[in-house]
Length: 105
Image (cartoon, rainbow, N blue to C red; front, side, top):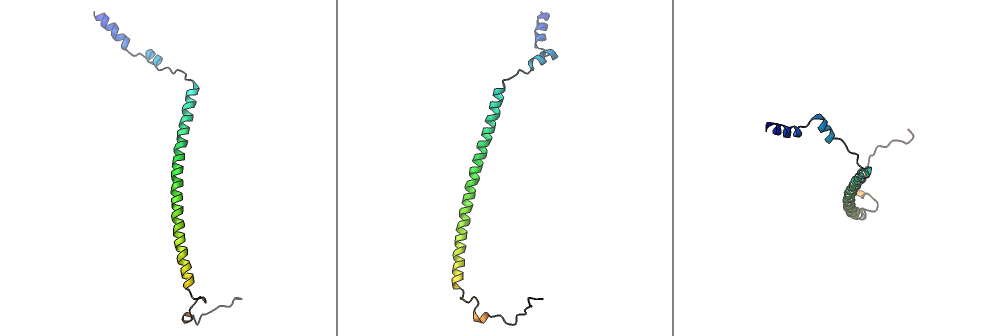
């Protein structure tokens, strides 16, 4: 009876030969690998496209904000231009005693 138990235990042992037979690589068809690689590349491109479309929306919103700010500043500048005296400087603000340098120095 002890021999039967011993024989059953021997078949469960992993020897170097049995372990190598189980781990032997079996060639896969290259089509599966190519399909996997192409699918991964496709998913990366889709993710990149989604990120780019999100960034385009952010850029459009920022451009709209800048356009609005420019329009407000333009109206302020135009208002300031119309309020300035046509001569540019009021008579009471004429600067006197300006030291000048000749141009042919």
